[in-house]
Length: 211
Image (cartoon, rainbow, N blue to C red; front, side, top):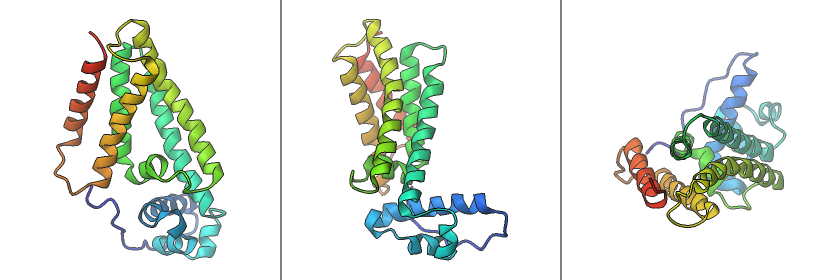
């Protein structure tokens, strides 16, 4: 993770017809610049220079930097929502589904650190009103899937402490805290991600849910 914010050498120009690849490249470069320079510091010219294209070429793919940021955040939230949708519908007990959701959340965050920071760690003022609304709406859907499974556990009378809403928020906050630290403090000698994730989630579920 030490190289999360390291910027690669500008890419060579692609042949015509590779527009979808160029668009993806622009989004990856923009993620890094938004994280490194903030919303105000990120400019179309910086993003275009990072990719190795002209600003005019970039405008062929995106109207402005708000649209780029919106696309990054929307894609991240839609991916997370789809993961929650799939897990929530599996024919497993609710505790196992909660465990899988939390694990998937951590894996998603560590696998997409720049997008995660833009969605969950950036200032509420960083970006357009549309970005805030889209991420809020998708976030509500995502958290509803997760809290629905927590409510199933509560319906079985297995919560040791708190109500479903409190437990849901405590579980999310703990996992968010872990991934935020691991992403923003790469110099720490962290344990293996899979192991520290397992220890955290096992400890949370043991303390909150009765067998």
